[in-house]
Amino acid sequence: MKKVFYLKTCGTCTKILAKFDLSEWELREIKKEPISAEELAQMYAQTKSYEALFSKRSTQIKARNIDVNSLKENDFKNLILDHYSFLKRPVFLTDVQIFIGNEKKNIENLENFFGAK
Image (tube, rainbow, N blue to C red):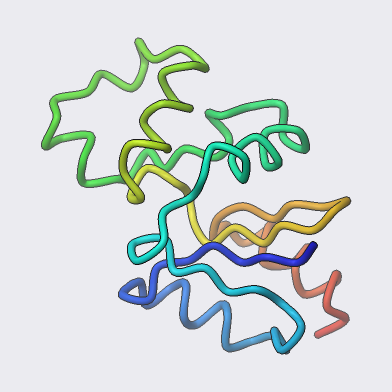
């Protein structure tokens, strides 16, 4: 399995995706085709944390008046399944590895994975 979950309107996502040869990857635009419970379970199996997959920068947090500090694991899971913007992105998912978000260390790990350095 090789999947990338991203948002096409996110400039950071498109910039990161452009760095790599993704011809053998399934690209999933999460606004058009939201993440399924099964896919989220596959991500959770590798991270053991829904919070690690949760975007604390989602505009929906303020819009819904959510107190992120009071959320439990199941709350993170339900919010991610409820609205695409709660998924930290991009997410590169393989059978053995997962790369989440746009932090510098994650991008370095992706570059090493793709041999892009």
